[in-house]
Image (cartoon, rainbow, N blue to C red):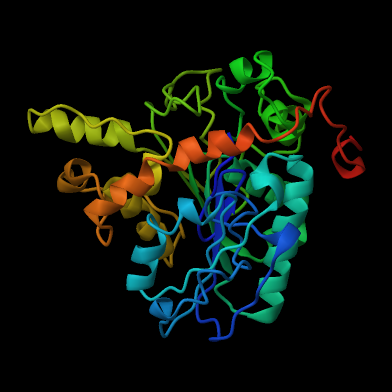
Length: 346
């Protein structure tokens, strides 16, 4: 799927957060409109529609990017970020990350470089992504070492690093795009990412997934089945993988209650998810978030602090809006688009 991310969003959500940035804003329109938290390029800290609102003024400016439109972040991560002193901004990537992931990665790389040059900081840039936005971000970190050196941390919500079974019926029902084909589990795109080490965290990376996420599957294996891998997990010492369903399932059982059911889009606004996100953002040691940040009450309250109950009506439109947009696109992407030279050299 394509989605969005804050701080750094890619194919479904990607966003960037830059600490201690000045109070002026960059405005990227057209091709570079990406949100770095939701989708890899739709919310890249560059799109400044949100930044222009007076009610977002704070003493500290941070950047949020997503691969999907404002709808993915405005009522989910943006308000809590502002409350904690961040100034979220987003940019939209072309065609909501439904296009070739290699091309989307160029937008991500360019945005990271631009932000790092404009607002130099020893803290580097943080990226928050959602859905396919995380996959595009990981591709960027794998094949763009200069970009990787400027990223402090990556926080991914519902990432699809190994593709998803959900893409298979979409493909056979002729509901595909370049990005959808690249997220088929057997695609050349994913095989190449694995071959170049892209299934290992290359920067401190916090992956937040759920066994009950029906969009990104498989998601339920865990880390104990040899030869079986959840689509949303990365390996390596820089990776922290948190299955919030399993964490909250155990907490619910101890209280004699039914476990919560987490969906692909609810990762954007769940209290448990936000616990891990801000644990990562505020961690100056390892720069990752862990399951220890999730409290029993957060598993049950569901709605993250700083979010209003009436915003639930907005949440209902996130995935339907994305599916509706997908239907407006022309059928393309098969045969799978060729790999760029840098990815096919070995």
